[in-house]
Length: 281
Image 1 (tube, helix red, strand yellow):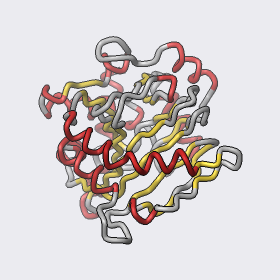
Image 2: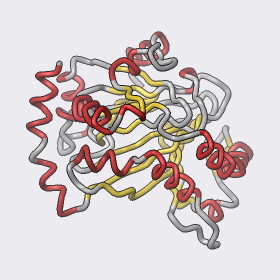
Image 3: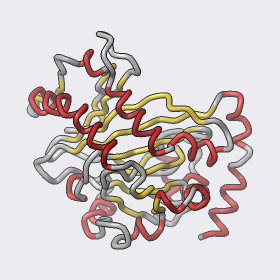
Image 4: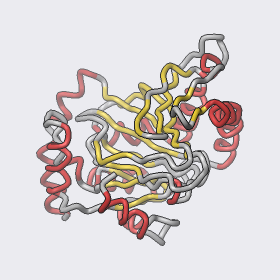
């Protein structure tokens, strides 16, 4: 990630509710009600939803993921930076692309090849408990469906990610950890309001630079807490700091998309979002 922001992430990580800037700007307690969450999403393009998934559900998911993470630890060749999972079919793994040095995205399929429950099923249950689809659908004004899930893995001393957006209108992302992730293991950076300015049709870095400029470089940092998902419009700029520890960082991700026939209506909201962002900031 850019050196200027890496320094900021180290100097001002989010630590706990009320103690860091992200929790003052873009965090909402799950029991505050949908309207509070939607106001945060529409204004900032992102929302840290505090205590959305109960401990019992998280414990069940951790148990399901434990064998998978044990195999990851054993099979990751740090010298070659390759990860070959012998039991990938059992977990429902479809592919494991490299994202950066020491960082990989694991993609799950809803059905594993041997008929057992894929890890996608475990993540989908957490999403249902947390009401992700309901909240994102209300935000988008369209029915949003979970289309893919997986986990982002960063080995100890692995690299983070540069500023980027995940998609365009009618798309959303949810990131959530099953356990607390200290900031040193890789905090999440967010640019509130950037969803209103990011143009998915612009060329890569140009689109990112324009959105960052429009938001005057305003950045908040979030250290993941177990069961506290981060919901955001796919156009919201975000980044990940390096993992400066020797521990594996594992963060679950969810991709949501609006029904195709409803996506055209979403484009009409872009100008309104820009107006809201400008008037708010």
